[in-house]
Image 1 (cartoon, rainbow, N blue to C red):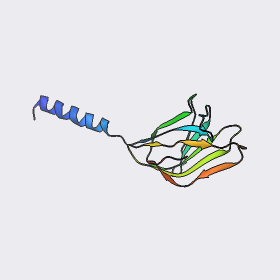
Image 2: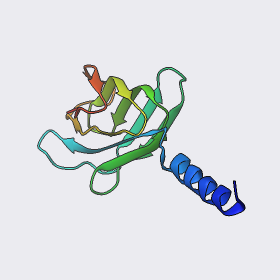
Image 3: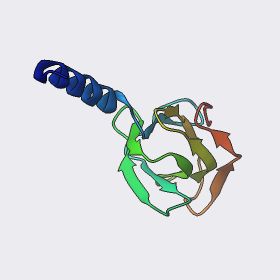
Image 4: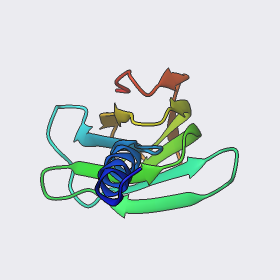
Amino acid sequence: MSRISFQIAFVLLTTTAIAQTFTANVTGIVKDQNGGVVPNVLVKIKNTGTNEERQTRTQSEGRYTFSQLLPGTYQLTAESPGFRGFVGNNIRLVASQTGSFDITLELGEVAQHVVSPSVSGRDRCT
């Protein structure tokens, strides 16, 4: 193989490897029961297989995002003063997937939780 052919093959293989994504992303909007967005909500995601946990806060438009998550099963929680806590269990993520999980918070005490049934990463959780 000539030197130029080898360089072209190396670039093509490197580009293909970079283009493959082995992680998943989760994004969504947190709203109240009347449909208004809720800013500054503490949102956590936990890989139930590894116990790795990440957290973020919703932006002014109620949006949150978690990126570069390993494929697996996750628990998603959301808490904000004046609202019941939200718990979404058995969220399954696969590689190269962006799951969209919108959350609806209900008025109440933070100590109370609304638990969502099992969902897949392709579904919306409300």
